[in-house]
Image: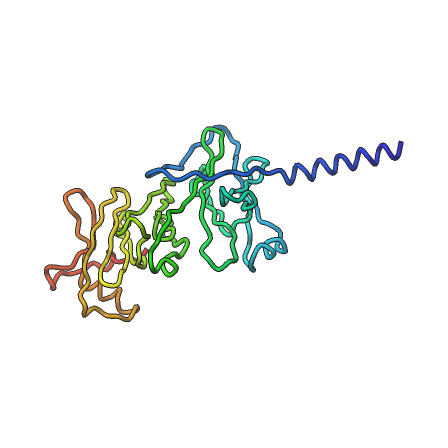
Length: 272
């Protein structure tokens, strides 16, 4: 009788552990144009949850920072990183943040200690089903290593991912930023956002490359050879010599002042 009871208890314990470790591998799909991930959830169920791994397990996955996991209901979400390598699967994330108040979509970045910028993915629930979307475009830019900076927070407007994508935090839309060269991500530093929060400006070696991400309209403002070279002096110099100018379609771009005596409103040059 005692042996039968011990066997039963062992079976229950083993079943519980199995349930805790239950997971599913998801193969990410590519992003389509201007996707909206602000999905509404019927009922009170919260299908996605973020949890933190134990400190020792997080360190084992690379570094001193926290490591996060994601569950879809009671199932751990695992992402297939390489379709050609069945063992290339990840469920530890260095970043995991919800993108909408419904908590049906979240942004994750793989926990990677190789020294390279780890890939980003969107995990989203729609019509009760979960899907994983890759936030990546191949690039052959000569300075990719310099300008592939991962996630940059653009004030309260959203997230800039590797100079290649913009994710709005208001409605959880994802925009692929139009490149100067289709084969390479923008080879410049994010510089400023327009007053209407829709035009991103990148500082290149000899110009300001500007993208109005909702429309895909772009504008390149050449910079004179005599502009300051020190990083600390560039922003005030641009502030004194350029202004936001809106065209008939309501699109704002940063352009050189035609009137050198024009009074510039400093509020137009908030860095967020």
